[in-house]
Length: 210
Image (tube, rainbow, N blue to C red; front, top):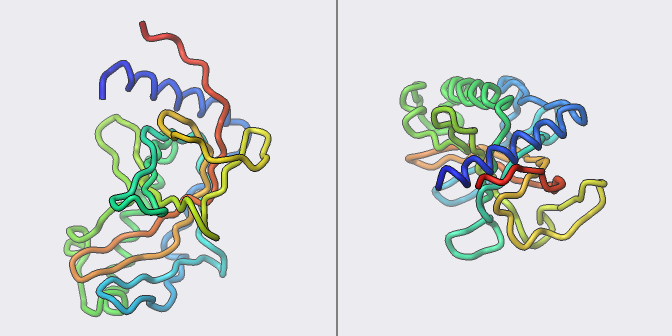
């Protein structure tokens, strides 16, 4: 990606953060030790453990995200991957969550993985839902259903239902994401993260880079 487009995206994120800073405070990630891992689901080599907290879904409200790409899937199916660049305020919560998750998984490794595993072993197998590289914004990869009962809902800036945009590239959103489950296979594991609601923010005013 060129520097001009990178600068444009960073400006969009900064504007989104400024616009929404006084609207809804960031809801940080509940402590992993308060999560409940439900009974295993699935009869294949990959199993999932539903996640709840206090009997409720584990939901995060993330303000001022940027979608650098349009959602995509390998087979062109209705369940796609949406990449969201997050405001800096979320860097530490996600980092702390992943550290705590690995520790909790080690404690529960016998029941989750069927064998005793150390934190080091689990770290090697862990497939994160996002990444942070250097000073660039943290990216979160969420699953987005485009059809069916669980299709992602879209909202406009006035909190009214809206149609999905034809292209998500370069758009800023407020996002509601659900940490739905922990998935486990013989060689890897990670979280299932679904984007359930996206509120399209008004286009940010960005200076022309030329």
